[in-house]
Amino acid sequence: MITAHRGDVERYRENTLAAVRSAVEAGADRVEIDVRVTRDGRVVLLHDATLERLWGDDRAVAEVDWAEVAALGDGDDRIPLLADALAVVAGTPATLLIDMSDPECAAPAAAVVREVPDANVAWCGDLEAMRRIRELDTDARIWLPWDRRDLPSADLVAELRPDVVNSAYIFLSPALVEAAHAAGARVACWTVDDEDVMRWVLATGADAVTTNRLRVLQRVVAEGPESWKSAPRPALLTYEELEEAVAVAHELARWAVDYTSSADLGVIRTKAHAADHVTAVDVAVEQHVREVIAERLPGHLVVGEELGGVAQPGTPCWYVDPVDGTANLANGMPWTAFSLALAIDREPLVAVVGDAWHGQVFGAVAGRGAERDGVPLELPPAESASLTGTMVSTELLGHQAWPGMYAFFDALRDRFCTVRMMGSGTLSLTGPAAGRGAGAVIDRFSPIDHLAAALIVREAGGVLLDDAGNETVWPAAGGILVARPEYAAELYDVWSTARG
Image (cartoon, rainbow, N blue to C red):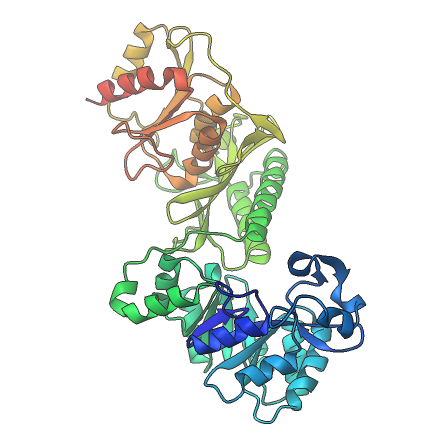
């Protein structure tokens, strides 16, 4: 089913009779329109609360009488009444989908619809508005608004009895489609204007798509399922979701820094071997991270060092190492870090590293740069392009030397470059972004331990290379090298030669 968003907006001004009529004539199954109420109680087609964007009048429509609203524009290019739009759709196969963001519009709009015999309408918009429509009309066809990554509760579905679950496309998932269909509802997706996203939405199983590009969507639908299968999943967050993710990440990092530096370690246990430690702090920090993310960002996944987890395609996933450097913590060495990174598939979006013993929080957002305690991190030019006289960090592979490590040491020694192994891969990789050394090498990359640091270095202007010499923030396999730009080529040559 194809829904024309605010009418045929590629040809006519949105929410006008011309736009509604053109969408119907073009074969749209549904025509979505927005409603507002004037000061004297007339229900009109308008999305915004004010008249400014489309009609050049900065007043709120709720403060203007219908006579003044009707005088704006000319011919069909003016703000119509809901009753007029109902008349345009009457007798056609199309459904008028009435959208409202203000719950106060529900009762007046429902009253207008009741005056039209056999009005072919459905309702979408604000959740509270949909509750009011359900109270007013037990037979109303309601689209349940859904802008979360978890699933609607059984209680909410039972309360609204929706015909359709209406999801923003970035929240769409096979699980949502399956749950909606199991509840006897269809799934709609809004507002989809990109062709590949249209194909992906259709391949996921959505029953209806809302678009501003009516004819493009009609062509994509006509292509059929075989052409939809190869469409890539759009790896996106909403602006609000991204901002909340950034806030949550920084709050968790600050909490972890404070907690780790003061908490009782409890009984220290081992996992794979005697050098693989875990403390009560590790478990408590990761559990807290999971609880906060579940509450603040429902539907997001967590993969952690202590409690596991599995990423799923197209779903936001947090990678957390609650204490990177647990052996240090267990042995009284104040050099550990909290690492947390958000990614969709293999695209990192948000990162924080908490340096527990310096009381610092490093952060980065993809495309926005990196910072330390709110101060931007930008690598200044180095005085020399040689590794001579600098410092490089690395870490053991578990509790053992990695293949080529001793040759790596020898080559750096010959260059009078000092090597440090401090016991935290997260802090070793973050170091160059913080001005701590020329670079670092980790011979086996893990997103749990290293992704947050890698994104921070990239956003600070550092160079990241995999063991084949390709620039990457997330190696497909093997290790990772981070360095200040001046040292990257020489350090990579040392690393690759040492590994043979």
